Amino acid sequence: MEFRPCIDIHGGRVKQLVGGTLTDSDARENFVSGQDAAYYARLYQKDGIRGGHVIMLDAPGSAYYEADRSQAFLALGAYPGGLQVGGGITPESAPQFLEAGASHVIVTSYVFKDGVIHYDRLKKLVQAVGKEHLVLDLSCRRTQDGYLVVTDRWQKFTKEAVTYELLERLSGYADEFLIHAVDVEGRVSGIETELVKMLGGWDGIPITYAGGVSSFEDLSALKMYGLGRLHVTVGSALDLFGGTMEYEKVLEYVCGDEGI
Image 1 (tube, one colour):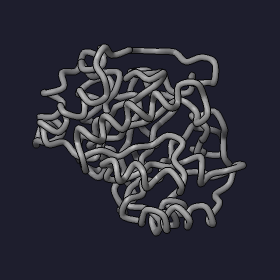
Image 2: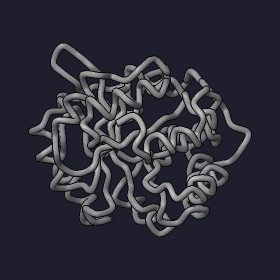
Image 3: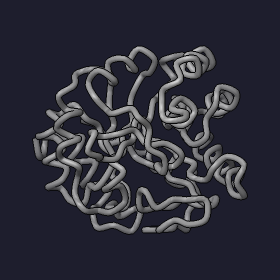
Image 4: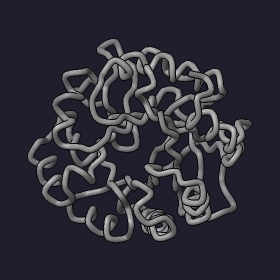
């Protein structure tokens, strides 16, 4: 289990939002930072934490997307090779982010279009950056049909459920998976236990789980139900982003032997 930090960018600023509330015209904010993205990148670099994700939350073509890109490039330049980046990534734009210092690009909507996986698009991405530089974001919401992947800033349901078969099939195209439990993301209300149990039962490429972590008890449950296989992101609950969980203690807990 590893701690994977985050730098979420919205409106050209580092923020924490409540998952599922982000639309073209509105979003519910938990925290707005007075620091730029490079500040957090340097902090993560100082502590030797790799694999964190920088997410540009505004839609490509929107008024703030270029401001989000500028902040992302600041972070990547401050910590070359240490961060992943996502948000509106395409085969055409992906190489720019790798050249700017990203270790991986994170993609959902480009691949999951019109509710289904477009393997021609997925293969084009792999050709553009290589499997070793691609993270597939399978963030999902719970329905009566299982945990369905959601796209377009988590507003659109696909027809693809997160299953072992899907993980196995897509692992041939990616180096890692990033999976937000969208219904609890940003709510600091506890982890999505059933999803964690399911993901922990699959032994394949690395998976980073995000969503709902609010306490060290949640981290302990994540380790237990995820069988130690899942990496974790803590956002709104972290004191760096206005929460109560101390960043240094979270690092010690996740990266050490505590709570196992």
